[in-house]
Image (cartoon, rainbow, N blue to C red; front, side, top):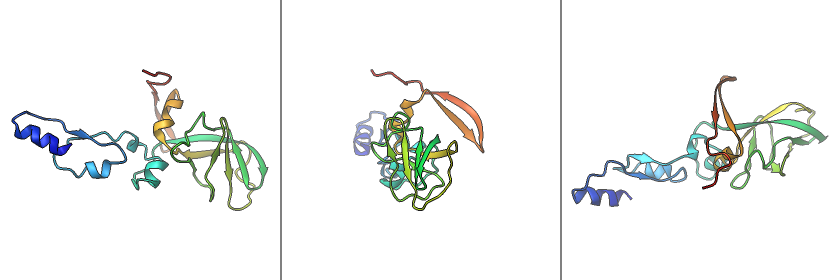
Length: 166
């Protein structure tokens, strides 16, 4: 793409914008001379897919809050957020603050976490925060994103394309 843009410029045609890449190719595109724009959409959230498979280590910015609804055993936790709330197609979501060696299992409406060691916590009603597995296929499942900083909601953003297929 950069070679094409340089060839266009050499032919005397002005090419102000050279846009390329996506989140997965961001590290390569960002180093290319002449690139003026990178289309790295999912990178803004730094989900599990981009961190684990692509090694992009940026602060994780998209999480989902779920409630513990059942504790059938001391190592099993059931929560009220499944595939209808967060995607697992490209990478499983990761619960924050829990020691697990198995990926989170998602059914349509529930998540199951298996703890490494038995524990009484978290208890029914407690909240668990998940880093989403793949932001690209999670965001569109929600009407709004609540932007917060230091535990305080600063803005609520409507997901404009929610429910729309062109």
